[in-house]
Length: 171
Image (tube, rainbow, N blue to C red; front, side):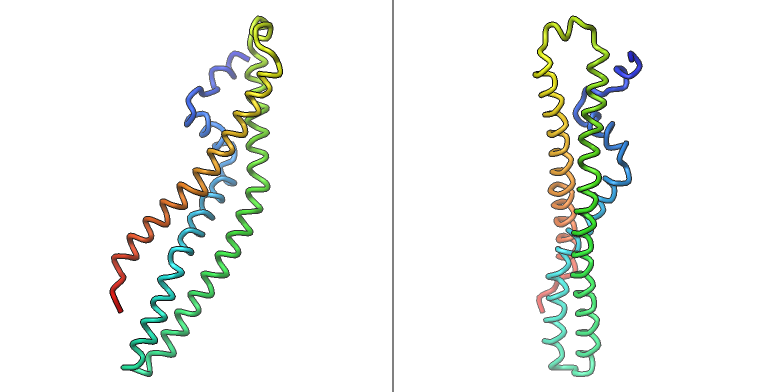
């Protein structure tokens, strides 16, 4: 039991990574779907702009219109289908990974605290200890979800927007 207490990190970031390592694949899929969805959302208006530009320039060269519009509509449709697939895949992995993540935190914290000396339990109520374990698991879940679905998504969208701005020209 003493060996387990040495392995439990007491820093928030190390604590989260300690449990994230146990769910590498599931959390990697959640991060990947967040990045892909954010990328598709960012690129969608750019493809609409390309279609509008193709229509505008078609007044000058009629032969290019059909090919460019077909290509842009194909990319736009594929992007929309990909976004729907990503949303569903994300939902499946949230449903499977997040509850297991919370349960693992609760179990390991319970075993960690169970290794404490009996005098600790005389000075601290078991209800308070259980509440803190539960709140730590819930907070870890919220931090994980906020990091993936807000921070990483926002960072991806911002980066993609900057890259798109390099290629955008008025009409």
